[in-house]
Length: 406
Ligand SMILES: [Zn+2]
Image 1 (spheres, rainbow, N blue to C red):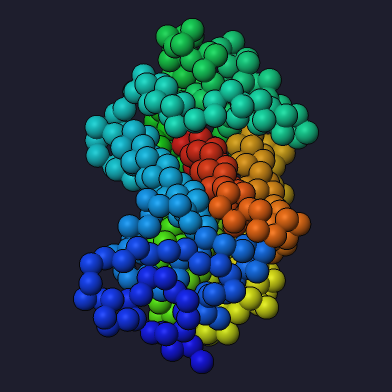
Image 2 (cartoon, helix red, strand yellow; image 1 turned 120 degrees about the horizontal axis):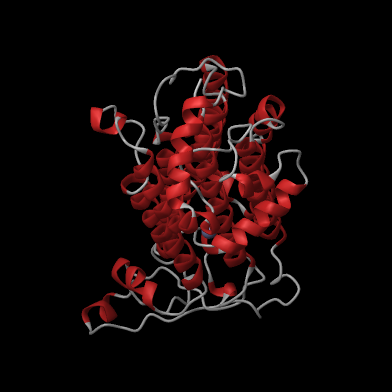
């Protein structure tokens, strides 16, 4: 019998007691797992430091105090701020291909090199990323060494484009590259034999950014909803129900939005495929959100089902990625490198979901990881890392499609 006013028997935040209510502020205290009402019981391996039915004001202020959700809130709040920075950066600094103003059309190679420099700044793990990508691409026919020859010959495939992500050549051969860019774009044939829409342009116009920005929006929605959910779910059974639905909707939004850059840029030249993949994942996302509205969805016994539903949805991304590789994997360097980031994202998300479902390490040492180090915190960190890998993959698509359109 979960009456929302008295279910929390030993709740120390006495909002239920009329006499106490009139007195001065009482300290909200943390309680143990056994003292929780059913609707707050989620993980029996976390023994203590629970907030229970705290008034809204105290619940919100608890963002600044220590309890077993503190790091769950902050891992995704900081992740949200990171993605907010990436969004501002992507929207303002990276040239927007959506614009068709004449000034944009007349942008010179020099402009693109300048923006390329700034784009490098978006890459917060510069060296690591370069090394990891090199290792990944070495397993692939597309050869990274092309990058090193950029200043001596025109590239044979689409890896050449006005943005350069490489620090090494950037500063030393700036001038040289600029000259080279103009010569190459004038003389290069389209290596893919695709229709050459931008023929005659001195420098290819940047492609539209909206799929990357929509992805960043989905990531921000997911991280913010998750953070709010962890902060507020202890307040009442109703708050718990509402914020958890918000959390699931956020996860679905992140997954659906993650498909947009993959599908839009991979199948830029095939609107039918774009619609097919976008429609499928949107339907999948809507189904997941609908399923989450059933109250039983939240029960602890269904934890594996929840994990399976969302990870199955994410795993269906294998289909468009494999399709992209089949079409362009051998000829377009960015098709291969973006797939490397997508594989990295898949590995990070997969590990995160495994940790979430298995509830390790707290399962092995119940009560020892209540405040720091329990599975949900690790899951959060892996989600942020996976989402960042996907953003880097998105930049690879922009490289590709800025250079070669349909
Ligand atoms: Zn969470």
